[in-house]
Every structure is written in C-alpha cells, then in structure tokens.
Length: 151
Image (cartoon, rainbow, N blue to C red; front, top):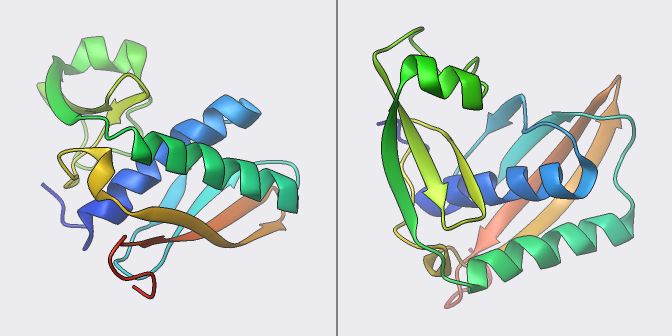
C-alpha cells in the first residue's frame, strides 16, 4: 500500500474527484500530489473555476464527509476491472487483481493508497486556490481536523 502521508487527505481526494465528475462531467484527476498539509489535483478542463463553483464543490465534499460513509476495499480480476475503471494511473502494469476502494455508495476507484475507515474522520475540506493553464485546471486543497482548524 502506498503511503501518501495522510489517509484523511487521500480519502478527501477521492471525494473531490467524484464531485468533479458529478458536477462537470469531467474525468478524475490525471495527476495529483497528496501531502499532509496541502494537496493538488489536475484535471483536463476548459477554464478556471468560479468562486461560486468552488463554494459548491466544498459544500458537496463536506456533505459527503459529514455523512460518515464507510470506506472499504475489494478486489477485482484485472480484466474485469479494466472494463469498469481507467487503470492507466496504477503503477506496476498489469496484475492479476486490482484493489478497488469504495466510499459508501458515492465513489469507487482503483487505488493503492491508505484511507480512513469512514469519511467522518476526515475533517473539513477547503479549496485554497485553483488555476487554469493550457487545458489544465489545478485545484489545491487542505483538510482541517475538527479539533484544530489551523492544521
């Protein structure tokens, strides 16, 4: 399992990705950098986000977090997973099985990273900035624990 430094931040990335897919019918991020203090996701997109859109994304992500959905894993044979999911970002090429991480009934995707047991342990999601350059929308975000809003 890959250690991204923060299971909370990594699980929030999954929720952000699914929220972007649902709101904008865009694909999941094609590149991401997940750290404990701040993270970013890059999307193929056609413009920057408006302030209202950033507020709506935060609202939707935080609603999923507050639902305290279970985060679970399962495994699929590679061939079956390749017909359901984009496996291009998985490291190591073709394997016999693919690990699928599910966040309640909100999201499922192939992943090798660590996650929280339920979304209620993530904290509060906040977009810090976004930018657009040459067909790429970059969304930078943080997660604040409930007991310390300065994390």
